[in-house]
Image 1: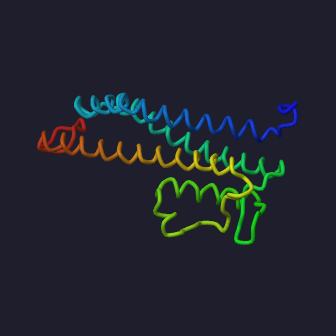
Image 2: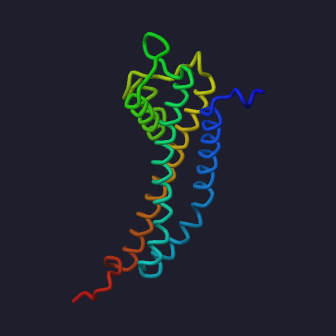
Image 3: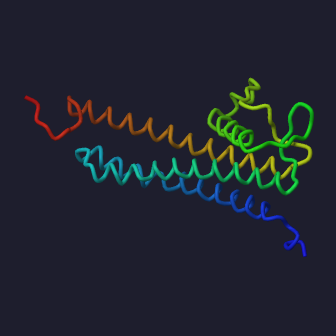
Length: 185
């Protein structure tokens, strides 16, 4: 009886929450294998095939971030359509259209990217906030979305720093620029 009366937005939101947790876990625990690929690319002459294989991983992260952004925005619109008051502004619970919902999702992305910086200084991109009193489960859903971005971007940042350091070491070891396939005259 409970399942038949549940709006479709609820199972979709639950599925997206689980998917974000799974993808975040995948990104964090398969990252070392991708770094081994990049190690071999750097150590063995910067081959194009190895680089392309390793960069597929970064494409996966970028695509997953874009897909979850769109799906989060759509799920917020679906939750509102089903009567859930997930947003609030300075006056109380509020409804939001597609553009305002997308901007709210972008605000969550920035909060995930900059961790507590935006929270601490009370910086916002939109007037909308989570309705903390009327939509407790949405607060958790938005938290998972925000942490997905925070964890993924943190992994990208560490990865690029590691790659840059590794390339700089290889550059210093050779005494010249990485192999480009052309002999220096």
